[in-house]
Length: 456
Image (cartoon, rainbow, N blue to C red):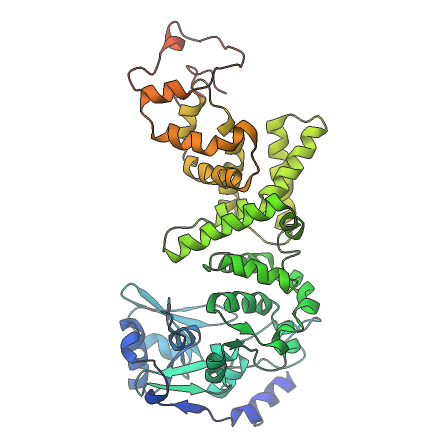
């Protein structure tokens, strides 16, 4: 407590640090590249007598010629001073208080300049920060950020870029560099190791050698990160549009093992590696084309070969196929939950995609028609296609995805002709004549569980 008070009162070198200011002639950013919401928020703060800068990733991306997804604002105004300036503004957070300003369809995040937390209670035994909500100067705010290229401030009024830590030079050198002593900064927040890999792949820059050197040794600290936060970071990694490069970089820096159970073992298997690389490449393409991507589908692909191995082992021990599959699904997800907390809504999607796979092999009677009506049919078929392309399915099953593609797009008569002979045991109809109803009139068969189908 005393140390924290002294840290606030006594002058420090970084408080007196002066920035290098780049005028509009020294960089390519123009205020016209900002959204209306970002311009309105900075203008209002300036008019109220406060400093206001666009900060972080938006400035970095604009300098690299990338269109930012959003704009964050940093200011010397406290949250309670920011909120009254805007009609639709809300203070959020406890550990780290921010203001969300709603401007039309945009939400602009406004944060107050902060200083590094000090004192014996600031970190745990591993050096991880436990608190980070001390207000400070702009120079201190820059020094406490993670990477130099994320610590740049753009003033829309003067069109100047303020650089306290050499971020502009690192952008020009296309390198990712931690601010401060790498070991200390990575211990403060182990997620910075994952963030370094993600940003390097996304931006096409190299991780500075001194920043990269301690990562393999400190990789076990990832296990101290709360599972929910780790899931959020992994989701950003895999949905960055550069998942293939990111996964390779994770392995190269010793960060993949432990995040997803046995992923290193999976990737060492020819089929497993091809399956995952195909899935990630497809995801990257969808992200770049701004098409929808399901995190549930992506995690289903990453964990499938572990489910497959567990399922086959249970069947080899005499287990029945479908019960063994569900037991394998539960076992793999339970093991995964120890590392990354996959939300239940995604778990449900993952299980549905996996459980549909045996049903695609059933191409006789009314079962194919019922499967077409399943709400997850398309996701299940996409998953099946990856299995076929990777070489997992062999022999007659190698063309299973193609068969279902033709079946889904065929007319009624063609579908009837495509059906396989039903070699299963016949079930008695519960209603006289109902069991003999055919699809000659184009009707879709009843849903699963309907007595007319005999389906369970």
